Amino acid sequence: MEQQSIEKAPIQYFRLDQLYLSPMNPREGVDPEGIALLAESIKAAGLIQNLAGHLDPDGRVGIVAGGRRLRAIIELKPDDLAAIGLAEIPVRIAPDEATARAWASIENAAREALHPADEIRAYGRMAESGSAVPAIARVFAVTEKHVYRRLALAALPVPVLDALKAGEITLGAAECFTIAKDEALALDILDRVRGEDYSVSRLKQLLQPEAIRANDRRAVYVGLDAYEGAGGQITRDLFGSDAFLASPDLLDRLFAEKLDMDAEMLGHGWKWAQTSEDYFISYEVTEKLDKIYPVEGELTEEQAERYDELAELAGGEALDEDGEAELAALQAILDGGFTDDQKAHAGIFVYVNGDGQLTVRGAYIRSEDREAAIAAEVLTGFAATRGHTGSTEAAPKSPISATLRDDLNRVAKGARQHATLRDPELLIDLLAYQLSHGLAWRKPFGLTTEDVPNWPTTEAEGYALDDRLTTEPPKDMHGKDLAKSFRAFRKKGTDHVRGELTRMLASLYRGGDDDLSALIDKETKPAIREVWTPNAANFFGRVGGPYLNDLWRDLLDLKEDHPTATTFAKLKKGEKAAKLEALFNDPAMRKTHGVTEAQEARIAAWLPEGME
Image (tube, rainbow, N blue to C red; front, side, top):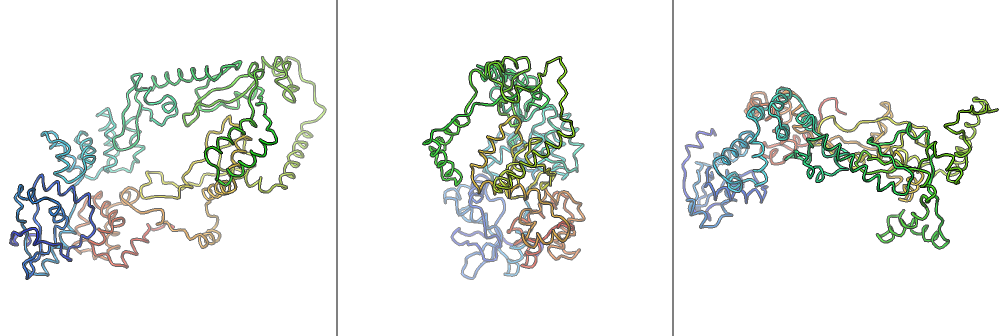
């Protein structure tokens, strides 16, 4: 039935208790919060759109179009209804049951939300006329938070909202423009990104080219409160967690001052404490220095037994907070510490790692302090007997040739490999440790790995991998005591070690040849749609309009001249992408279009061609 014939249908008035939701109405599931908001909207602005229904022989009316409005009206008190002229409810009455069924389908299929650009401008006009946020929220039946976010967008330059309305940029891209401080730059960037596929992260970088993100290690170390307290300006993203620091010079000064102050405190008792503005201490800095180690402690027999008991409990994750503290105290005894004599001849490097954490690396003895350290027996063993770095005398020629030295080194390595065969568990633990930690050149096995990318280059909406595949291994192992770190790693128990090994091997899996890949797939049964659902951001918005038209028809078994197909073809690309996203993700949308079980299965299994 055409819309104009609906408009010509008679309007009759009924008491609320005469109305009920007809079984013909396809809208079954509703959001209670949404109904409450709609009730507030009707209370504030009245019933803008009438209900439609079918009159029963007993004088009751089954509502076939306007089920949400009926539910909202029922929420209101009689006095509220009377105040807005709804003591009796206006309903368009269908002449017959067939017409009522047509209305039910038409209204729910044709319903379309207000375009975000129009919604933003409408909120902006109401705010400019003096309407408060709560009043706007009531009229539009939305949350106040939603209104605040839309009003932030209302202040954008007109061309940005025009581009959003035209489908040249997404709503997510428009939100990025709220962080721009330079309108000329923003409009220049707008011209560059119209119709292009830019990630949110990249767009923010373009709009704040000189700013430093709040997750920069310097900002994390200094702290945003300290930066703002010193007069630094911050632009916060209203639609995300990003913040941008606008004063790099100020941040650098605060960073250097705090690092110097912390180094002075940490360097107390040491002969020297040297700071570095880098996030690691390079090998070139330490290669000519002599490294010394803490003097390890010894446990009493009773403490050793207790240590073993606690370590076993920790491996099974059965240790409570007090037990963890006791184990840490015993471990501290074992680890020992640097003596006053060591500190008097050696020093430390103090720097801020890539995560913004203050880090100490040491201890080292400089060449000019070497002789004194040897005399004080702080530097002993091979380090004390090797050639003096600063000596002007030529070292005596070794009777062992370079070739022989290489062979001897190979023998020594062979002996170590021979010994490790006696402890397969240690080898497996060590492999898991190497794969799950960024050991760089200090890795114990002569193995290299390559990156096997599993994350899209753009924002990964609609994509959800097992958390174990998205957990990054520690990247900053520079200066850390690997022996101590490995001991701690093993103490977490067999389950943790095997879990880390499984996680890292899975992240390195790439398939192999066709036969091997097929065998692995048969065993593991991978399902792409288990982790990925196509939506406007990750697929539909990144292909052309004709492709979307064909996909819409194929999924719904529509002929090219079917009204649903022709209506879809007339939409802008962004609107097409949004409708397809709803078809894949919203059961109500599929119900509205009468999706059959076969079509439902096709949608659930659909993948772009060539995606295996």
